[in-house]
Structure formats: structure tokens, C-alpha cells
Picture 1 (spheres, rainbow, N blue to C red):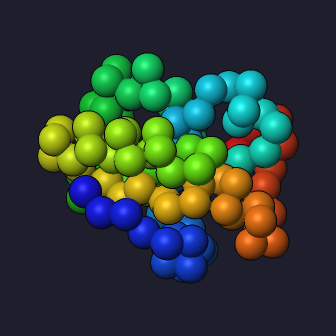
Picture 2 (picture 1 turned 180 degrees about the vertical axis):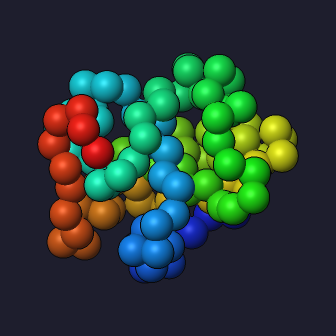
Length: 104
């Protein structure tokens, strides 16, 4: 499991990276990275089988704490998981756009 900064994440995102947002639905609808799949942390064990194993999975939350926990879990499951340092809050503070609502 690795932690990536927002600049590296932004480059991966622009290249079509798989992004999993582990926040709760009420947080996600307020604003999330475009294309991020909502999988609340508590539901991650049931979603792990649907995640790719052939490329990195970027995990994001509000600030980077839950995503670290999630990325560690995914790494133990054999997924190349990368926690996004600073989370969605950092993404927004850096001036990058978010999408509101349930659609990514």
C-alpha cells in the first residue's frame, strides 16, 4: 500500500484511474472526485471482489485517514491500493473540481 500526493493522484485520475471513495453517502453527495465509486468503508469487504487487480486503485476519503485504513485492507487482499493524501478536502482546497450528487 502506498500513499500518493494530490499531484500524482491528479495525473492518474486524468489517465482514467480507478477511484474508490470510502466516505459515507452524505459526504459523497456534497462533492466527490468525478468518476469516483462510492464504497463506504464498512462496505469495502463486500466490494473488494469487484475491484481490479491488474492496475492501481486510488482510495480517497475526506482527509486521508479512512483511505489509509481502506488501502491497507485492499493491499492485504492483493490489490495495488494507493491512499490519496489530503483526501477530497485537499483536492478541493487545491482548486480541483468536484461533482455533487450520486452520479460520478
